[in-house]
Image (tube, rainbow, N blue to C red; front, side, top):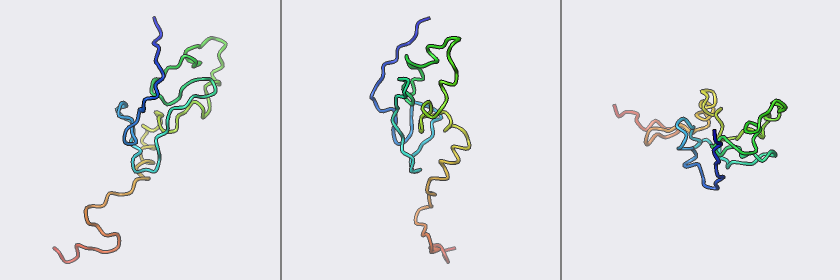
Length: 117
C-alpha cells in the first residue's frame, strides 16, 4: 500500500467564513470569529489544512516506541478548522454570537405596526 503524498498548498481553503469542501462545516460569518489559516506545529505537522495527513506526523510514523502523549495539547488543534465545531454545543455557541435577523423594517424601540390591523 502506497502512502499518498499531499502537496502543501498556499491556496485559500475558506470562502465567506466557512469551508465549502466540508459538508457539515459551520459558518463563522456574523459571529465575530475569523477563520484562521493552517499552521505548522513544532513537529512540522500542518494543522488545519483539511488534508489530515502529514509526512512528519507521529500517526504516519507510529511504532511501539511512540508515546501517544506526543499528540496532545493545543498545537494539535486548529481553532476554526476542527471537527469539534460540528457538535451541537458549538453550533449553539456560534448561533448565540450572531445578531438576530429582524424582519424588514423592525424598529428596535418603536412598534411601527401599531394600529395597522
